Length: 285
Image (cartoon, rainbow, N blue to C red):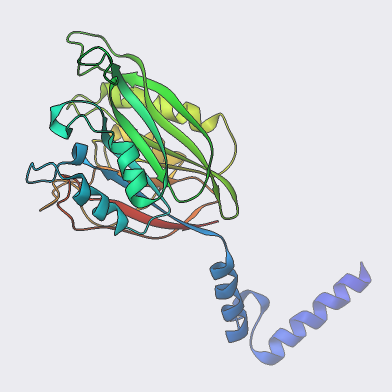
């Protein structure tokens, strides 16, 4: 005890002699440089979200090549996509948008249908519509999970669990990373979105590890139904609107992340290849 007191006395005396104390010491230039280098060395990942409007631009013209070019220009490692058609109907020429985009961009893909309907004719592929995740990294595992939905294809159906909440685990730098993408209910009444938020949080809370949630939430950041998300996830705020694409009035498209991921920057990209603008964010861990 006497030795500890003596050491403390010497520290205080040195502080008095130099006019500083440990609490007010300023980091040296070397320490600052070392801290910056340590941050730069931490594994990073760039993640985007994009509602692709089934391949149609804000002009209403279907052009999947334009969609692919817009995604390519993001230079993202992982992209969550919403409103993806797979042999859905005439609006997208019954094409498999998920597979075609993956080939054009040389990325891995996981498609999670919300709707999976009978084909228009015997022997034709099933009609599917939903969300997808594109990844430059190998996909370790993937699941199509259920959340509460109010069907847009079955009139009068009550809200019920339905698929279309995509979970993809990718082999990212620094270790496996789970990335989710979702498309929440569009109606003015927030009741279904509130249930969807609870369903998604139950999934995220069930497993440890870093997670990124992307999607079209169809609500702005301050919407009461989104509040529970912000107790669990950080919003990579791009400081700009996302909808409509030409002159955005609202921010309804999000990239969010759990700890220990840290948001380094985020932005929207001015593009009318869809009726939404994409959001892209860079994270380190």
